[in-house]
Image (cartoon, rainbow, N blue to C red):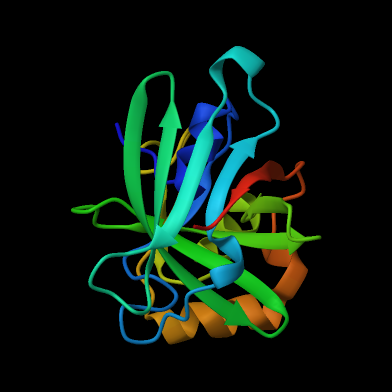
Length: 186
């Protein structure tokens, strides 16, 4: 089972959380604006020091708009496409591995250029939005998310409008997943 929570960090850190995914990224190959502040190598602070999760973010080959994240931990390596979207003052990433049919969406914050906080979206808030038909989708027990989540089938613009309208209500209440920069982009 693949788990495209941003950069697969939630799974690798042992978080038992769901996620919110959509059949389309918030911005696509034509509309994504790469957030060059993310370029470099990052390390998760919540992992065992002897088995650190590392994430290298670089521009995707043959693309001017998409970034690519290579995640390494425990001798395993995975590569994820990273579509960046700015909505108001907030930044979101839609991530997927090649061949995935859904993109996991997370908010992220970069502070002091050295600390990246990944904030999963609030699955309960999105479950309620699906239940009362504000969004089209389904509640899942598996699929691309750890422990299930919400699988949306919304046009990108509709989902961006929803995120802008509801703002912080969309973000999960748990602690963020924190990465620290260990190497600047080359």
